[in-house]
Image (cartoon, rainbow, N blue to C red):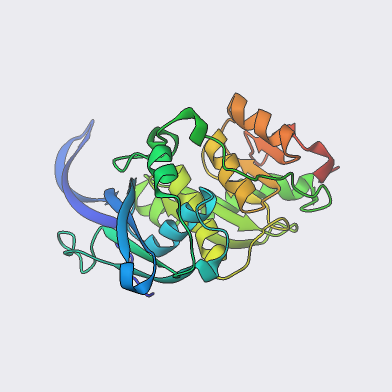
Amino acid sequence: MSEPNDSERAVPIERVTPAGAENEQDCVAVEEPMEIRIAFGAADARQAKSLSITMRTPGHDFELAAGFLFTEGILTEPAQIRNVEFCGPPAPGRTTSNIVRVDLAEDVALDMQRLQRHFFTTSSCGICGKASLDALHVQGLESVDSKHAVMHRSVVYELPQRLRSSQAVFDRTGGLHAAGFVDVEGKLLDVREDVGRHNAVDKLIGRRFLDGATPLADHPMVISGRASFEILQKALVGGVSTIVAVGAPSSLAVDMARRFGMTLIGFASDRRFNIYAGAHRILP
């Protein structure tokens, strides 16, 4: 399941300043579509279906596919995945394609009519790709344990900068979101970057899912942008109890955090942060 990382590209630009204009090279974050296909069924009646297309930054594509299937409630354990591979012709300038095929175990039962009702195969981003309002909520979500992921305020203050300092591709392109797991002492454990916030989260959770390391109640998640409903839902499927966002939360995200016992922090910086839900996990 190894894969290269093609997350940035050099492009010619004309850099304009008050002193004039110069021709230079600049580094930009790559954005390309990725199709997720699933193969399922008995060995003598195998089927392959296109499930979704997302605009993403290449790199950690297998984690993205697995994380998507997990956080959308399609898969529940890594043993349901037999193999993940690229298929189809390589994308221009790369050795891998923009199609990832997830080969499921033979005993995995899928309701394809339900999946077709829940996803447009031309979706470009999370909620935009849901085919009906009924698909907004992943089935079987449960509240998180209130005893997990208790942190001191001093740790929260440090998290945005720790995440930012780990964004190597952002340093060169300025164009990627990030999501990371930390421990309750603030140590950064994993980081994933992508042009899409939800993709960064799927890559992050997807790695832990493939490793059989979910649920993730003891690992607060830090995100570089705003906290949307979809990010909260994906985190909840992964068992994450605490979300620290550099940006603002949405009303639905706040409602979801309060409903499921999650801690939601917004506008986090080294000077201040707002607790929108679950203040009992943040100690003075």
